[in-house]
Structure formats: structure tokens, C-alpha cells
Length: 99
Image 1 (cartoon, one colour):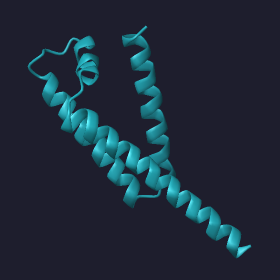
Image 2: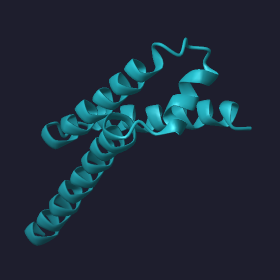
Image 3: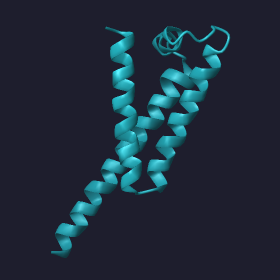
Image 4: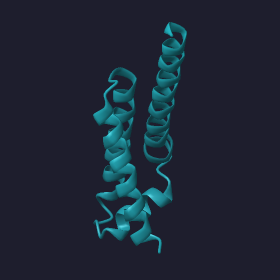
């Protein structure tokens, strides 16, 4: 029984690392390092003035990196629920922007 618990713990730790990597990657690459046009388009569709869009893209990237780092240090169920809710909310937003 102890071996099964150890295997489950290793799987959960691996999943936690993958989720952290995905959030950090999505914050760094398309938002902070390259500032992809699609990221800017989302803010433009929300009628944000063009002057603020690069700042907002960078801030959202920093937020995603911080959220990913939280997955490295905090192993709480609420963090996963927050991740799920934010991804569902983003999906709904994208459905309205890209019909």
C-alpha cells in the first residue's frame, strides 16, 4: 500500500510541475518576451486605449508567471480550482472576441 501512495504522490508532483511550467511559459513567451499580436488584439477588443495595451499585456504576463510559481510552492486544491476557473473564464472571453 505504501508503494501505491508513493506512486500517486509522484504523479501529483509531476502534474503540479507541468501546470506550473505551462503557466510560466504562457506568461513569458507570448506576453513578456515577444508580445504576440493576438495578445494585444484581446485587449483591443475590450476597447482599451492603445497606449495602455503593452503595459496590460506585460502585467498579465507577470501575473501568469507569478501564478505558475505559486504552483511550484503551494499544493492546495484551491489553487487548482482558481486555475480551472480562470481558464474557463478566458475561454468564454475568447468565444466572444473570436466568434
